[in-house]
Amino acid sequence: MLIAQNMTTENNLGLREKEPTKRLSLSRFLRGYVPKLPKKDLKAIAGEFKPVKFNKGDRIVGQGEPGDAMYLITRGRAQVLFTPLGGAFGTPSEEVAILEKGALLGEMALVFNQPRSATAVALEPVEAFSLSRDSGIYLQALFPAFWSQVKVVAENRQRENQQPT
Image 1 (tube, rainbow, N blue to C red):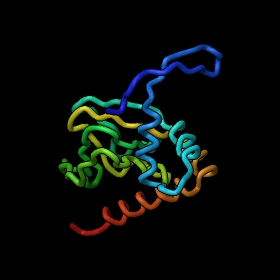
Image 2 (image 1 turned 120 degrees about the horizontal axis):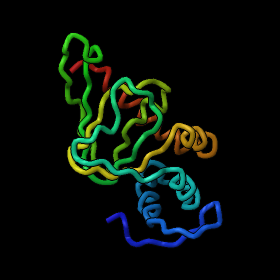
Image 3 (image 1 turned 180 degrees about the vertical axis):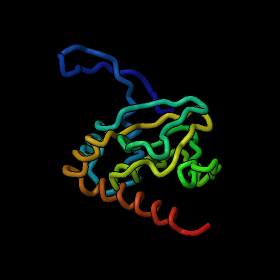
Image 4 (image 1 turned 60 degrees about the vertical axis):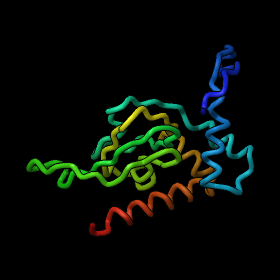
């Protein structure tokens, strides 16, 4: 389980608040993308991600929307749907993937600075960590090894999406 316990931290206003100890688990997930990065760097990267939750049936991202964040799924499954012609002429959506624990979601829009190429819907309750576009730019400058791995995932997905089915 990701939430082990709560710990007290001090926020930037000097106020003490409780924060879940999810960052350690997130560091373990990130290690899969950049295994040779030092622990302190992984913790710094993890600090840019924010925990988010989606209920079953929630739309996580929508095709055509601006890519303002990407997500690292830590629990649950999301169905990825592509609608040809953006739904014009009543074209139905096609399932292109089911993403599970450890998968990145929405990275293509962030890496390529383009609108979302598909819609993702939570098939069950989903817990994830989101990385905003601004934080992504920051991490790209500070931790190019991490960002290059995110880019590899995005490029591979883009290639897969362009192959005829």
